[in-house]
Length: 110
Image (cartoon, rainbow, N blue to C red; front, side):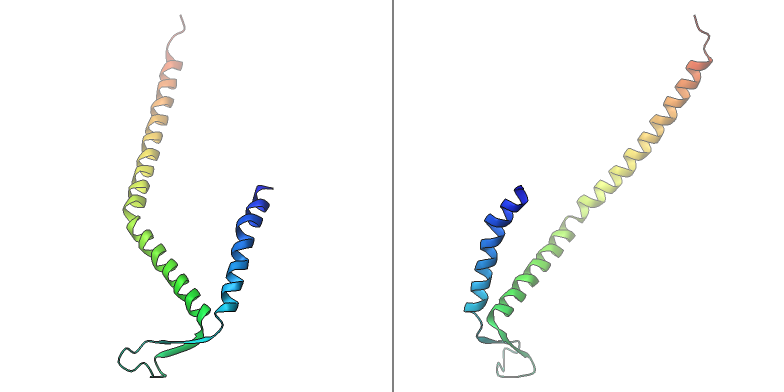
């Protein structure tokens, strides 16, 4: 139920705004990648403006995600090493527990 409310209150208006944005920016725009000869057809792209803006947004999201992922690598490495160390300590504690139970079982009952 809460997910439907979120969809109606947030995603529906966002979708309507994006559709209005796309309709308002249908005109063709040229993205020139040659700074010395912008009229060069080889290094230019003709597309509707909203397509170029969405492509820039998606590219920015991907680059940001990649940078974040690389910057957090040291934390993931530390978490892996601590996880392995915790497993090793747990195995050692289990070994000592079973040994203590064996010793307790061998003691004479009072």
